[in-house]
Length: 511
Image (tube, rainbow, N blue to C red):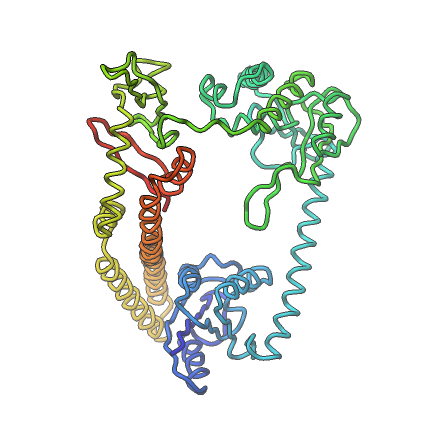
């Protein structure tokens, strides 16, 4: 039996065509007149425009489609799905990726037929051309702004703000240094140029190390001259404009790839000489970046030979815990090692956590993993102790669906009465319809969250089984592994271990 999702949409303000009920029935008849068995689920958005895809029932349907709950999505016309080609193509790409067919019953749009596939190819070509033209126009506009030294938009770099300046009859946007934040930028570059690590600078200034790295790499802070130009060109930038001792405006420094992740060292990076103040002289800026370069090619930190839990244990205060030797050997001449809170090391009064004997914690962790390997139920309880069971979620979902169904019947009943009422009464009824429609939207949002949770829980259960198999395999090979292999393997299973004090800890698994 094939599962068919029927999507219908009608904007009460503008649409004059078929009613939602007619759209649904015509879609059902389309399949009932074909060979085969079909099971239908209806999704309807009434009062929503097709100008974008931000519609509650549409979003819910797409979420279920991504989880392979349907074989086909059917609509009365393609414009019920989207009224612009980019939104439509994005929707189609998602459905194609998850092997869900899209069928328009009145337009003969069915990609399983030669004509339907031809239409799909033509539309895809137009959509791709539109995307490329839009991207090129944006790129050209931003580059022209950058050449003029003007800020092209977005969040200004740390230490700067964007300001509007009137030039003739037009307002232009430029960068301006924030005086009270200037010293922070200067401190970061001075420390980096002196060889301090990102981690140590982060602790000194209480700024995330990723933010510090991004600041150091950004040419916006550097005064433009021959030294900085040579470094930027060596690093992969094309430098444009006349060097003037002001800062640079970078372009395409970290563009996003198709998967949404940012690229580094992109081949089309540009740096144009701007008119804003460069905070850092080129000598300091280049030296800070060279220090960063040298650390990037250094070998990874050596493997700890003291514990396979190195870098995994976090204190109850949130700080990392480092390995430290006891003050003296025991009577057998053996030195004990402990995990200690790193925050407490630098500021003794900041945390009251006691040190943890490493050998005992290792033993407790292995004992717990052995228990999980032997008993799947205890492992599941440990992972999902605070989640609803599937029965509870199903019950909630059915309850919400019943509420939505009742509201839809109320709207249908009130709509039929409108034609019999005078103007004043009709206004009251129309307001009531809008009020009910708003309640339907709220219930649809709740429904979407519940169904998403149910699907995620099912995925997590599957992932948990895979994870448990990994635990079993690791324990079987444990005694044959080197310390380095133990560290690598345990990190594939455990994300972190939170020390709670008094011999209590919580394991967070990679799931």
